[in-house]
Length: 59
Image 1 (tube, rainbow, N blue to C red):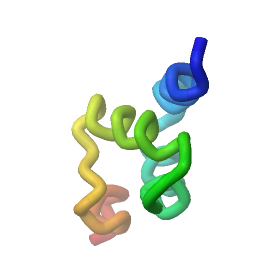
Image 2 (image 1 turned 180 degrees about the vertical axis):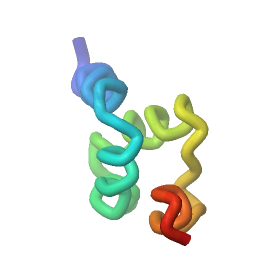
Image 3 (image 1 turned 90 degrees about the vertical axis):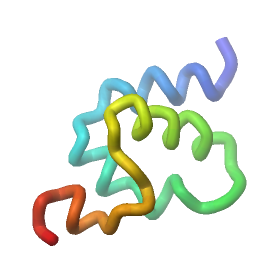
Image 4 (image 1 turned 90 degrees about the horizontal axis):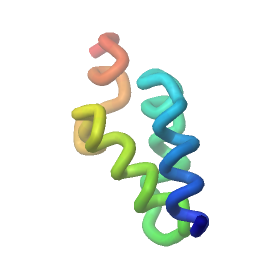
């Protein structure tokens, strides 16, 4: 199993709030973690363009 698949399976287990709070770490350009992280967000209907406070219901 390749690294991206392992990471994607890991991110799928995270709660929505955990995914959102980790956004600033994983949305930087480059890095093997970015692609599977963004895919996990898309699968849940969470969009990176929205401010984190909006996604958490605080905006």
